[in-house]
Image (cartoon, rainbow, N blue to C red; front, side, top):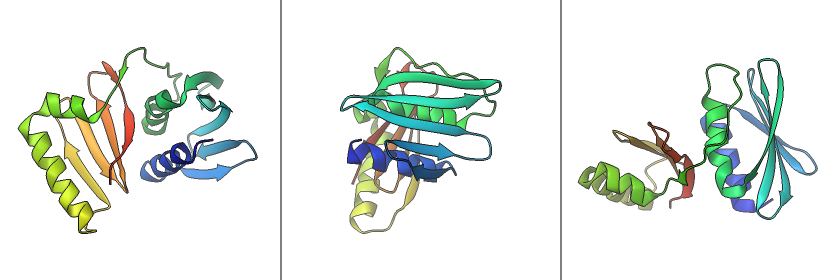
Length: 155
């Protein structure tokens, strides 16, 4: 599995209070409520198996789409089946476009704090597109679910 993808999954598990373990060919993310197996199929796709209230669900995703489903699973309140969205992946330009000058200002402040080694976590807020910084990654989520959540390297 791509090293960057593994690192991002590790950080998401940590941020959302889940544990992580590695098996021979897969990553297992778990908590008292959730159990997720992420198995690399090839360089571009993964198979995710996760629990829901009455069983297990299995889905195949492109590597770039894993974050949306994983964030939904790790933050869910009920053990429902979660379907992968068929929409565009969020990026920083969406955040800036939606939130305007405030987003630019917050990102500039964050870059300065990162440069000075002063920040581990920062909620950048957002009215529709929410952004959070956590240990070198930017987590982007859309309140209206018109975009897929995404994780972007931000150092």
